[in-house]
Amino acid sequence: SKAKLFDENSEVKTTFKDVAGLEGAKEEVQEIVDFLKNPSKYTNLGGKIPKGALLVGPPGTGKTLLAKAVAGEAKVPFFSLSGSDFVEMFVGVGASRVRDLFKQAKEKSPAIIFIDEIDAIGRARGKNAMSGSNDERENTLNQLLTEMDGFGTNTNVIVLAATNRADILDSALMRAGRFDRQIHVDLPNLTERKAIFEVHLKPLKKAEGLDIEFLSKQTPGFSGADIANLCNEAALIAARKDKKAVEKQDFLDAVDRIVGGLEKRSNLFS
Ligand code: ATP
Image 1 (cartoon, rainbow, N blue to C red):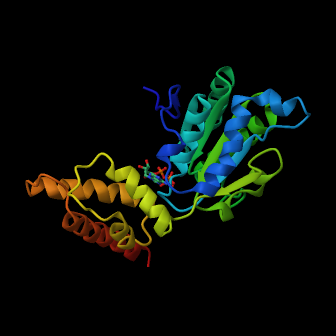
Image 2 (cartoon, rainbow, N blue to C red; image 1 turned 90 degrees about the horizontal axis):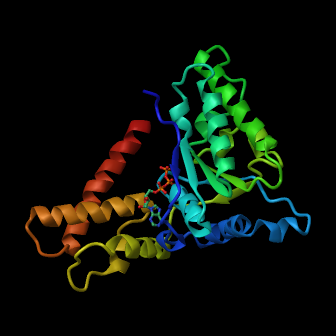
Image 3 (spheres, rainbow, N blue to C red; image 1 turned 45 degrees about the horizontal axis):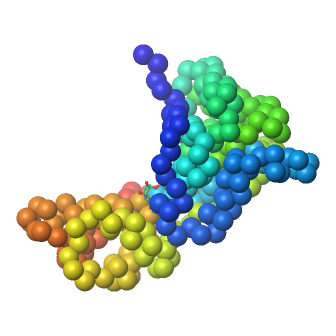
């Protein structure tokens, strides 16, 4: 059986209200939503709709969520794949998968293509040229560049890509007419963490008077993904103790557990 190398979702339910904080980034991608919904409004005046934008920021900050919300807001299909899935591929396969992906997206346009971890295929070329898998990566990257140059101005396929290492990307990717826009998606500040808690506390049975401001102050450096994980852990801890609602102490215990995990993670690299 063939490995499935991209996903297609024609009924994305995610919208901007699922994305907490990230007001600046949402404003920037709103323009992409408008292009997808009403392309002729722009092309009638002779403008060219951008083909791609790069979402840049640390892991777990909501890049995938934001890209999906663009598709959900514009009500267009969402094609997604992860750059890291291409790393172990046989020669020729990566390029043909990229070709298939663009072909299908064009058939269903307007559409969004989302490439997570684009750095896995988009690292600057010409390093470690001896390794076979690197040749394959370059073929895949070249195919991606060809596809992006290939679509006309009225294709209505917009490619969003995510990375936490924009600095190592091949500069050819950033050239005009490719990923010529960068949108920064950073770790949330206190106010933004509150907004993220609001989203992820919603499905929980909370003890009365649970203080979101307090929780937000206990979690500096947490990403949105860390906060989502924290809320879930707290619910599991409370359930294990047969509680009827999730209490402040359960969140504190979950913080300890997650911070312990984060420290282990960073020790591995230090
Ligand atoms: P990675 O670089 O690791 O792929 P990412 O930036 O793409 O991470 P997501 O996959 O979008 O991050 O985030 C993972 C999960 O964390 C989301 O599905 C959501 O539950 C939660 N999350 C992250 N950021 C936010 C946010 N700004 N608002 C609400 N939830 C968030």
